[in-house]
Image (cartoon, rainbow, N blue to C red; front, side, top):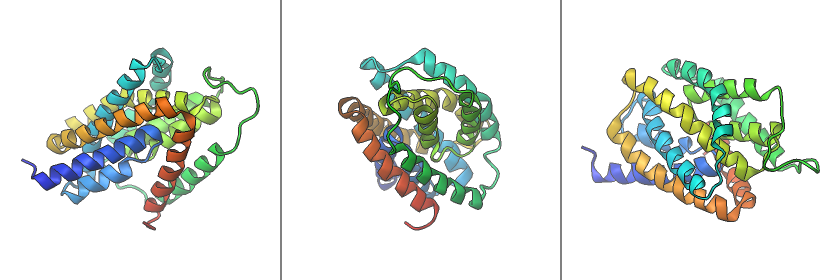
Amino acid sequence: MLELHALLILFFAGVAGGIMNVMAGGGSTITLPALILLGLDAGVANGTNRVAILIQNISATLTFSSQKKTRIRKSVSYALWTIPGAISGAFMATRIEDALFEKILAGLLIVVVLTMLVPRENGASDKVARKSVWTGPALLLIGFYGGFVQIGVGFLFMAVFFHLLHLDLLTTTVHKVTVILLYTGLTLFVFAILGKVDWGFGLTLAAGNATGAFIAAKVAIRRGEKVIRGVMVVAVLIMALRILGLV
């Protein structure tokens, strides 16, 4: 049974991670170190984190749905592209992560957030997605990355929905949490059958993540694109600095 201090660490790490993940991304840079700090090896921490990710996105999706913000059929069509990659990535997740790739990812994330600050051309739709031949392949690759390591995957989904499909940040956020919910259920199953999930740690963390996700979804609905953009900028810079070992 987890001690009180461990419960508190996991819960509040989950709250912070849930807020970051729903509003922008990078919450796993808080939750994964917390799991490892409390004694899990990296492989089990990676799998256990998926319990919280799943519950967090259920919470956020239900909150958006209660306010009639979800577009389930469209989100499912995007999720179908991610599933083959996500399952493949999950099976490969026990392999050692490439430190060089993490540095490349940090640079990519900074580029992504900077480009999101550039105004789009006039006439871009904020609700109805444009078509792009790159959307499917991009979602497949992001699905693989999400299945493999998850950290920062929210930023990558936001880049696709924002830049390729020209959706506003609230609609982008709604699609992101729904897509991640749908593929995470499958990747969690893979980690579970491979014995890479500690359910006690995972459910405790999930309680915090769900709380943070509920708060973030409510704020996103009420405050809209401006607050999402602000949180995203802060979150991506923190994540990039953590990957580079500067904080």
